[in-house]
Length: 226
Image (cartoon, rainbow, N blue to C red):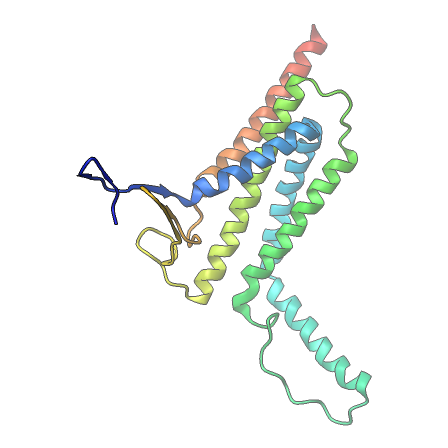
């Protein structure tokens, strides 16, 4: 029941945790990683992510055709390798053949592209001595990079859920919302998103990265001229 203090009936405190708030710790984690690695590695990492976005957009429309050809080649090689005289009956559509799974495949593919971007930044970004501004720049670039990753992954997840016809609640999330109840406090956590809650952050993150790079370039030019 509801708690009572000296005969006074008290209502439990309700704490609502929005979906974007769940991603803030991940973004901060990216900033901490940037603080440790330095601004050069994180700047190359963000540039790599921008190229990864372009690559993903360029190949997304070709993914169904490529997967269909791979499945067809696999179906032709199967009977040849097993010495079957006649082709085996066509199996039902698998995971790769289902066009509804293309956003999920792109989600996985972009994750590996992001890992490649980080690996390149780590490989060619010389750390050297990291001063305070180098660590602050790394923190900002790391947070920007993680915003880009989360936002794009959410885009793919939303597209996958839409293709699957998932139920949409009026608040923009899936209808299932887990709740944690402790004495006097009720915590409600939003369900998995069916809309990109970071869509407004994504363009600002790229704009902030470009502005920071321009400011750094201008500072270097002014120092050289001085």
